[in-house]
Structures are given as C-alpha cells and as structure tokens.
Amino acid sequence: MWESAIGFGRAAGLPRQWLNNIFAFAPAPGAMWRVPEGSAAVNGRTGPADSFLEFSLAQFARRARGCGDTEIIRSGFHYHLEQLEARGKCKTAGEAP
Image (cartoon, rainbow, N blue to C red; front, side, top):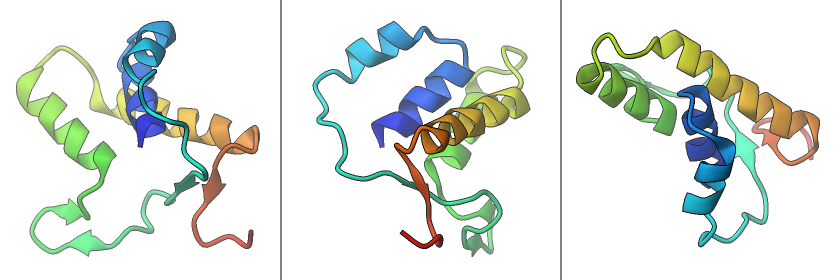
C-alpha cells in the first residue's frame, strides 16, 4: 500500500524523498497489483467501492477546499502506478501473470 500513498503524495506535490523517508520503516511488498479504474465494484450508496484513492480524494476535497484539484491528483496517482507497471514493479489485476 505504501506505493499508493507515495503516488497520492507525489500527485499532491509532496517531495519524493520526504515520502520515501516517511515510509522507510515499511518493507517492500513481495508483489504489487493495481485494479484498473472503472473495473472495481460499485458501492450502491456512494459510487466506486471504497478504495484508497477514492477515500483520500474525498477527504482531501472536504478538508482542503480550494487548495487543489482532485482530478490533477487522480491523474498523477494513475501516472505513478502506470510508471511502476512500465518498469515491471506492478501488474494489472486480471491480466495473465
């Protein structure tokens, strides 16, 4: 999960080194998978199923009104995961191993 948090932090403009220092205690995962946006189950009450990204964006939007664009953060978050996947560090769920 720490790569999700790093991706969100980078998309929100936090320095990579600072984020790396915060998560230095966490061991690297043995495998990383991502679920493509739009393929997750839908929660009948609120929309997309509870995911780290959706929860974090909702909290950010509630608390930081006018301080950032959630679509820019969403785009940056996905870019981070796509870069991990391009470097072979992350796989898309549902694809053959």
